[in-house]
Figure 1 (tube, helix red, strand yellow):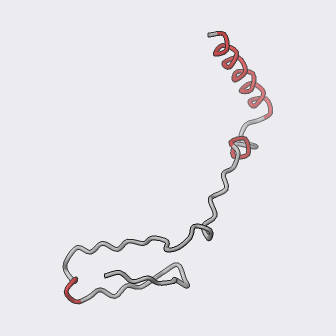
Figure 2 (cartoon, rainbow, N blue to C red):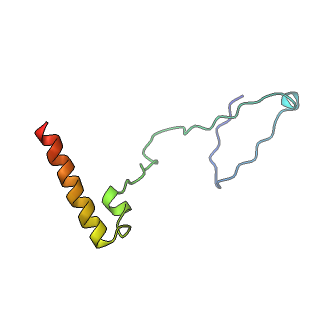
Figure 3 (cartoon, rainbow, N blue to C red):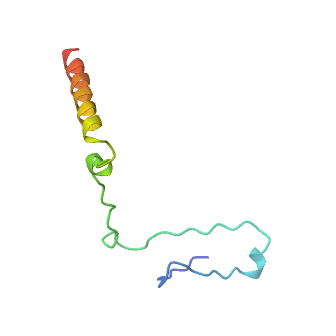
Length: 76
């Protein structure tokens, strides 16, 4: 049985046919139509995610350590 609905809220009630009661039932939800309505999640930059987590001193130390590691990789 397939039924296409247009939900008006985030919760939807489902009526189960009598012959399905007591048996395993799969309910699948998929978007019908174009993907134009779906906006991809905006990803944030890693720097924005960790802004303010490190103290200025720790951030400078981490930056220097990172530069050293990158230089080591460049010499290989």
